Length: 163
Ligand code: ADP
Image 1 (cartoon, rainbow, N blue to C red):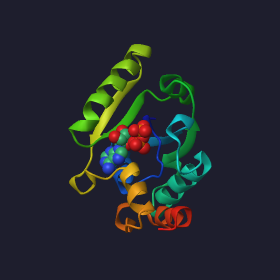
Image 2: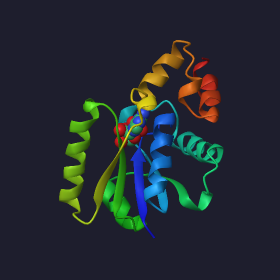
Image 3: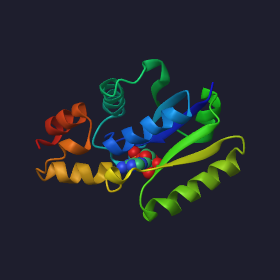
C-alpha cells in the first residue's frame, strides 16, 4: 500500500491543507495527517483540538476514513515515517517563500534517511495565500475567514477567539 505522511502544525487545518490532502489521495492510497507536537510555536489549539479538526474536516469532505489516519508526532519526522511504514513525506508548496524552507527540510530529511522521499503538491490558486497564521490573525481581529477553513474550524475559531 502506498502511504504518505503529511506532517504539519495544522493550527488550525485550512482549506489550503484540505486541498493538498484531496490531491494527495489521488496519488497515495493512504495519508497519515501527522500533527507536530511543537510547544516552541505557541499554538492556539491543543494537539487534541487540531487532530479533532482534521478528523471533522475529512468527514466533511466525505473521505473514506480508511484512507486517512490522524495522528501526532514528536521528534524526528523520518523516524516517525519508519515507525509508520511510510516512505513518502507529503508537503504543500505555496509562494516562493515556502520553497527555500521546504528545500532545506527535504534535504535534511533525505540526509537523515535516504529511503524516505519528500514529494510536493502545488497549492491551487484559490489557496495560494491561505495560511494558518494569517487566518488566526484575521479571526482575532474579527475578520470573516469562514470561506477559508472547514466548517468545524470556523466554529472552533469563533469559540476560541470570539471572532
Ligand atoms: P508547518 O509548521 O510544518 O509549516 P503548516 O500547518 O503551516 O505546518 O503547513 C503544513 C504543510 O502544508 C506545509 O508543507 C505547508 O507549506 C503546506 N500548506 C500550508 N498552507 C497551504 C496552502 N494554503 N496551500 C498548500 N499548502 C499549504
